[in-house]
Amino acid sequence: MVPSTGSGGLRRPRSYYEAKNVAYRVWAVVGCVVVAACAVWALGLVAPAVKLLLVGLVAGFFASAPTNWLEDRGLPRGVAAALSMLAIVGCVMLVVGLVMPSLVDQLVRLLTRLPGYVYEASGSVEDALERFGDSLNPSTRAAISSLTRDLSSSAASSARSLMVRLSSGVVVSLFAFASDMVTLSLGLVLAFWFARDYPVILRELATIAGPDHEQELMVFLAVLSRSVSGYTRSTLYTATLAGVLSFGGYVLVGHPYAAIAGIAMGLFHIIPVVGVWAAAFLAVALAVFTSPALAVWTLLVAVVAMNVTDNLVGPIIVKSTVQVHPVLSFVAISCGQALAGIPGMIVAVPLCAALKGGFIYFFERRTGRQIVSYDGVLFQSTPFTDSEGEPVPSYDALDDDRFFTSTRLVSGERAPEATPAAPDGDSAGGERR
Image (cartoon, rainbow, N blue to C red):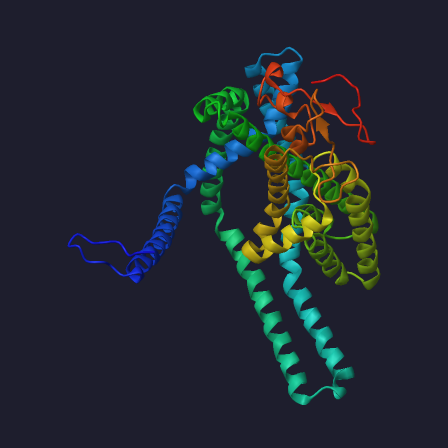
């Protein structure tokens, strides 16, 4: 290649242009970092508005399905959205009203007794060192003893500090509670409008995208909605079931902190893999101070609740909502944990499901080859074909030929025609959609 000529007729060396390209790339990276920093700074300034928007979107997301169901049965969409929001608020208030008194009572009791529990555990460690510490190196024994005393002192002081904050920060807590209630109320109003008007908003977005990109936009929104909603619903169902089963079992065996341990099992169930075991450890640790026998029964209850939820009921619920092979789930959870810790683990599976659906759609559309099949592993799903026997990428990506119309992403007459393939690979011969 001949170097280009500058304005004065002099040939510039090739290294000049290579250095120029490197400089462009470096400044592009710097610009991206600056933009990201400005975005984080701006989000910090508008944090209340972001919280309000998140509350509205999440609540509206959950209210959209019952709103569609009620509209299909003849109710005006505005009335259906209002009834859905009232039902959601009523359910939340009922659960809070049933659980909160026991939770507060047990939490106060636990914080009051925690210093005694800590000193009891410290004394047990000291007794164990007296009995079996002869085999340990003196420096190791001293280090264990010192660490035990430091941990017990720190835990006791933390419990006392928390009790002081709870008792002296009533006014501040009331102001914070009032602020949260205002945000929640405005978020519910926003959720109502979102649940009522999102089909029209989607049509307007499709118009903005234009006819060349309308289908890609609808498929992207459908895959994202199905993945997130499916995983969220399955997680909500399994977490609720795990919490209820654990709470019932803990009450039966006489656990003094059954409400705390049961709620912990339900909340920690959101964290994949390690969450349920952390909740079980907490329940057993709280039971140990009552009696070793109660700790054994508590562990048995936790194991039974986890197995019933994760091995019996969980697979049925997940299969009906979002399908991600365990290999993909494990890889996604590992990557999420490495990149963002516990929040990354929580969003890893639905994000993996969305990426899987997007890959299926673009692969089949670009190549014309159907990658999904009944006997597949990573891409096990229902294969759909049109009237000419060609794959329908949008339905293959969703594993559902009714999702577009049931969620109001497109109208019934604009939905693609497709027929589920029979397990032997032939057309099922059913009614085309």
